[in-house]
Image 1: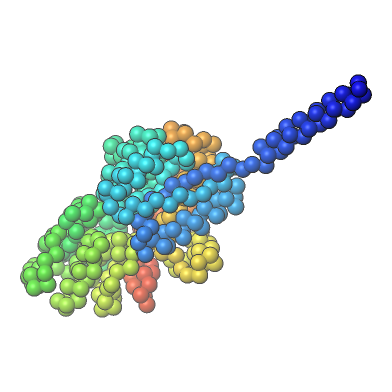
Image 2: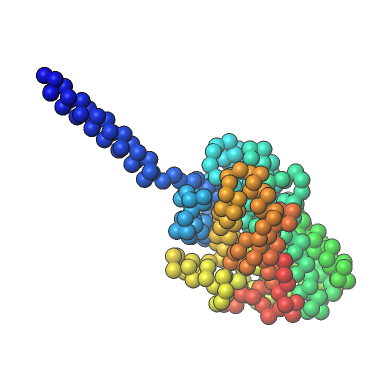
Amino acid sequence: MKKNRTILSILAIFVIGSVLCFGCTAKTTKTSTLSVDVVYPFSEDYSASFKNGIELAAKEINDQGGILNQAIEINYNDDGNNTNTAVEVATMIAEKPGFPIVIGHRSTDDVLKVASIYNQNNKLLFAPIIASSKVSLGENEGAYLCAPSDDEMAAEMVQSMTAQGITKIAMVHTASNTYGKDYIQKVEEHAKQAGIEIVDAVSYLPNLDYFRYYVKKWDSLGAQAIVTACVGNDITTLYDYLEKTGNTRPIFATYDIEVQPYVISQSMKSLTQVTSYFNSTATVGSEAGFIQAYQKAYGKNPDLPAAQAYVSVHLAADAANKAQSLEAEALKKVLAENSFDSIYGSLNFNKRLINGIPVFQKIYVNNQLVPKDNPTGGGQS
């Protein structure tokens, strides 16, 4: 009997040890996943390239070891490009745990509206698409601009006009849009310094018959070029009106014209110059490497939204890995004190505005926007 009790005791110890050992093995092989929130109007067709850029960056980051040795997964949030929805989505994201840097939104008004929501919940916001230098204002603490500012792009646009001998311009923008108003204001400031006269500035697109009065006014005042900071449907309407009124003036447009596809006649495309920064036809350097990786993954060329999505996710991952922390204050410190490699070269943040992305003019060649042989040398942000 004593012998049997001894055998049972040994068996019990073995079973308990096996269970404990199994538990230890499970813990050592388990890998945690870090959820990264991205906000964009993903229900819209034009968002496909942006999502591709996010996915490509996430795959590369995971292949390189993830963020703080954790694999990342993307949590896609659709704000419908609507400010009310953006606030609801931001509130939901801000109150839950996860990676403390959020990538999004698409609209300037949305970013400026939700920046404080994230900041109050110890999260940062990387804005990949907008260009508003208002991001740097104190009330938007925690928001970072990952594209050249409206001031940088307006400066390049005016330099290009000056180099082409243009001294009088008419300007058109979308009245209710913060980005359009701010961009036009920056153009006005730089034009004044360059001695360019603004003969007219309008923020309302009437019907075609009334628009003809605009054109007659521009003719009488000697406007040599048109500057547009229109957005959305106003872009299509403006170009339609310009074609129907027989416009032959150069059209200087902002990068918003390439954020999504717009219907523009070939005759107006041939007159258009776009102030932008991503070279989708690059054949050397880091941009070319990104283009090749994107082509391999998706079978087509990336556009500006794809590039910006890709850059923003990599910047967020690099910041966390350099900080070796997921705490907001540690990330802010790293972002303020370091430079980061990107497809554009070395980038850094100054007052939460990004520096280092070259700004240049593009023209349409076979329906594709490509860098223009620019007398200004392309400008540097």
